[in-house]
Image (tube, rainbow over all chains, first blue to last red; front, side, top):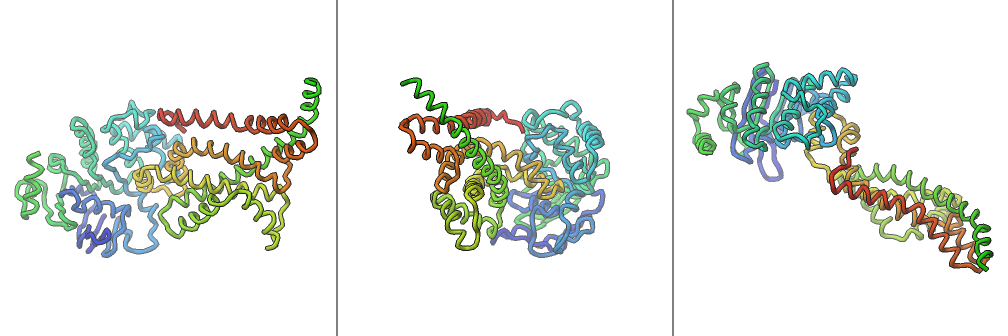
Length: 242
Length: 222
């Protein structure tokens, strides 16, 4: 589903992705962790080409992103991205947020899309907030609307960039619950997160990045309990103490 | 004495209303065209493509940095030397449009740039094309920043339209000039001119104030 082959990316002189090789198969849930600035967000932002890379090859859903002339809007319609800061459209209600892309990208008719939108919002437990504006919702609720916005496109892949990092502790659970449910339904997911409980519960693989390199990859339990590299061990001990 | 004063006023009023009509036509058309091009240029100017923003920047600097009267003279008296001969009315509208577009461009670019980058990224990620992103996500949010100064700019541009009197367009200011040399009541003539400009501008000033108040309360929802 996603295949990185020797991908490099530089921000000026900074080598943010250094020879990334990674293969994510359909239905797989991959958790990516690592210290800040390790390139983990950049990695998943390459998958829907929010970021370009300078060297290497990347196939997403068999589309070669390293080639010129790729139809990016078409590709992006198949990949949903959930941001740390939600980025809901503040001038639209929850329902309008969710159906904007189905109506305009999928060309669904409005009534059909509204049904789909209500159904999707119900799935993330937001059935009573269809007509609320983002400013009227808590962080956890906003993030669930953002997930519904992604889901409504029936994506083949969902990317999550630290989806719970901007949330108050008591709201993290409600967002993770939705993500667990998605994972159980067989969604292909790449999740940048430090939520170890989530990783242990649903991830098929944990990937550890540091300084732009993919340092270690393993089963969640073996990775967290018995990391193979010094850098991973250091990182895990740090997130454990918090 | 008082009676003849009012009689004079009644006598000249029809000419002034005609002038007012012309001012509304010149300013109105100029603002409409200027707004269209101002939005187009402003959105382009907010992009990160140097080859796009640079020429627009030069245009804006030239127009903002030279007096309007000079611009009108160039359009009306110099362009004919290059084979572009315009009547006073179209020349006035062209000049107003060029002037308006330059100022409105800057306001629009500022508004578009003020929209959070995350909004672009969210819209991009969901597969919207550039037109859809602008139409549904970016411009509606940018409008909150754009509207108050835009309406304020309209007021300034309407007043600037008085300058087109120099090429003979029979608008309010020109009617004032022509009248004042014929009758002794100079104060009355230009007070009338002022009152009529004020009649157009004041509602816009009120509108702008109201929008600014609402913006600061974060209540405007488009």
